[in-house]
Every structure is written in C-alpha cells, then in structure tokens.
Length: 193
Image (cartoon, rainbow, N blue to C red; front, side, top):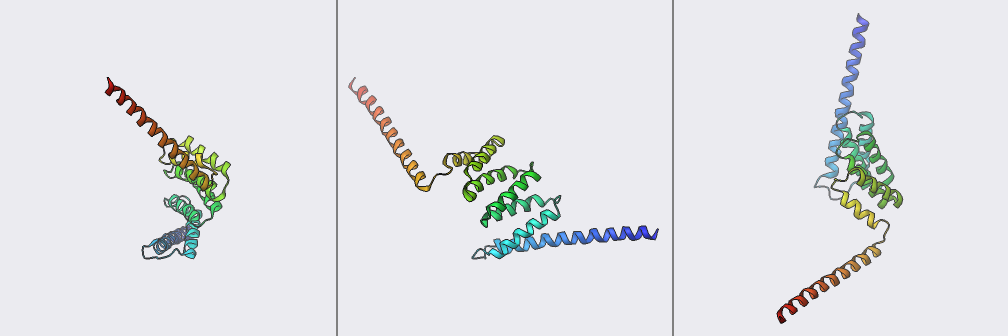
C-alpha cells in the first residue's frame, strides 16, 4: 500500500511541477511580448524577437494540445516572417495547417504561404500553386481578392507594374472620352430636331 501511495504522490508532484513550468512559460512569453511590442519601444529588438520565437516554438512542442498552442504557432510563423526567415515561417505555417486545419486562422496560413513563396523565396510556381489552392479551398475568404491580384502580378518587376498601370489608366481615359463624345453626339442630334 505504501508503494502505491508513493507512486501516486510522485505522479501528482510531477504533474504539478509540469503545470508550474507551463505557467512560467506563458508568463515569460507574455513578458517578452510586452517588451517587444510595447508602444514605448522605439526600435525593433532582434535578440528579443529571436528569443520570443524560440519560446513560442518550445511551448508548441512541449504542449501541443494546449489551447494556446495554435495562437503561439500562428504568432511564431508571423514573427519568423517579420524576421525575414521565409523558410522557417513557411514551415511554421505548414505545421499550423497540418495540426489545426479547422482553426479559423488556417486559411490565412495558406494565403501567407503563397505570399512567402512569392515575395521571400521567389518560387513563383509554388506561389501560383498555393494561391490557386487557397482560392479553391476558401472561395469566400476575405483574402481571395488579394490572391487573385497576386496571381495577375506574380513575378513582375515594379517597372512592369507601373507600365501596366499607366497603360490601363490611358485606356480608361480614352474609353471615358469616347463615352462622353458619344453622349455629346446624341445630345447634338436631339437638339437639331
């Protein structure tokens, strides 16, 4: 009987120390988030951002079933993207999609994968494939319009985009002028009758 009681006590102590560790991790993350994202911070602190990213990842690995895991994984992916680490961000967004496919942020993760392929990794084929998958899977998502625009402009240089914009503006101006001329022509004919 004493050995059973000892085992039960050991299990309780182990689980309580694990909870303390989890609470400590959450508090450390919250503290670092406040330091990094406070309005008082005048510049971006790369070492703190790197530390926060590691804390997010460690928490998700250690407590994958915790309700904070999706939030921290999403924030880790976004932070990695902010830090310019496209491959790491891509992997974190993919992990989010695989682990939490029903989460409301899963569509945004897929969209950001396309964005990273296009803008950070310059793999335009994968970007197109990802944007098309996003549009197919989530046709009513608020980012569908952005994905369509990205597909139309993928791989184009800023100079090409400016030229296309100017050409569209020119064509639109001519169309408006033609429409006005047609309306004026009708009014002139009506006035002669």
